[in-house]
Amino acid sequence: MPILPEEAHKIRIPQMHDVRQLFPDDKLEDIEKTVWEKITSSEIKAKVKPGSRAAVLVGSRGIASLKEIVKATVDALKAIGAVPFIVPSMGSHGGGIAEEQRKIIEKYGVTEEYTGVKIISSMQTNIIAKTIGGIPVHIDKVADEADIIIPVARIKAHTDFEGPIESGFCKMIVIGLGNHSGCSRLHQEGASSFDKLIPEVADIVLQKKNIPFGVGIIENAFEHVHSIHVVPGEKFISEEPGLLVLSKSLMPKLQFDEIDVLVIELIGKNISGAGIDPNVTGRSVLRKMENFKGPTVKRIVALDLSAASHGNATGIGVPDFILQQLFEKMNPEVTYANCIAAGAPEAAKVPPMLENEEDAIRAAIQTAHRTDTNAPKIVKIRSSLHLIDIKVSDALLDYCRQRPDKFQVVG
Image 1 (cartoon, rainbow, N blue to C red):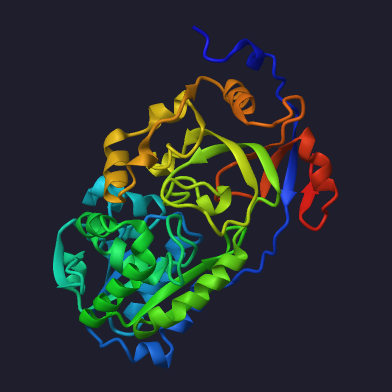
Image 2 (image 1 turned 90 degrees about the vertical axis):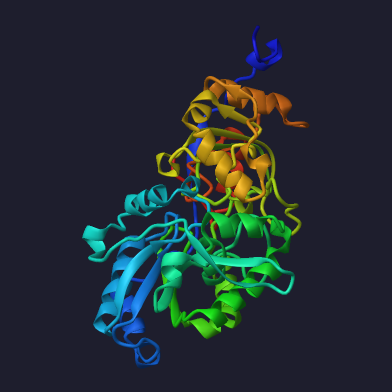
């Protein structure tokens, strides 16, 4: 039995054109030197006692220049007399398996050989306190036994909630450092509570543990490092909101008013915690995007799963249509572990699958209400993280040409 109705087979897929979205590309030129100078400054240096065992926290995201930043952090800590080692800190990612979490950071080049220090990955946690509401506060046992803890974190908008503090230092020491147990427990409260819960739990961790500083990374629209911010631990909660505002101002976006069909080549955990960043698409399985300022997207088609996602297809439930090849690369065990821990089983629901891109696009056009099937507005992107070089259909070409401040038509 054919999946598509006869009229859908008659839909002509329009020609696609290469377009470059234009954004500022202010970036930090000497990243390692900046990290070194900031950590070895008198203010930060004074916070670290010589001989201190330092747990350097590294997460699971594909962050610009991550391995160089981690190595520079490690080298600077050594220079001021500390004894650093690396602790993968990514909550339930990697299926909540210690060795898988180690493999994730190694894929980013953060290896023992490159950094010159040990990587110690464990899922064991210690409960160091409880919140006023009785929620246990878990932190990684290995990091708990260190003298100091140093998070290396990208500061950016979160995919599942909005607040003055979203992804950054506080989330890493609360969710990432909590491993599978702590991550799962906090997600039971619902992501809608995180704007208050994460700062509350972060404050407890900061009071109980010695976190002298964190290394904050802010990227620009081109995934280049815009700036590095070494922030004292006692200032995480007061300074992170300002850094989040800066990060959000630099985020790339789709500069259209309306898109009939958005085609995404890759989804994956290395791309976004939600697989597909709702701050780009305006679509989330966990919340209403009330303050979303991007385009109205009628239908989403996802083609494949990134290799760096290691089978974690969290977010597969967001698109309207996917290709069979994406589903075949999904590791159900890893995906379900992450989605259950995050309190988002909806993110693992599988949408209709088609064998090829053309039929998936036809299905999307057919079901995108009030769409001119002879001139559909289609945008194709590499992923929700890669929004510079895109493709647009004939129907959007004039729109791009008329806005030379936002677009450059390449071909």
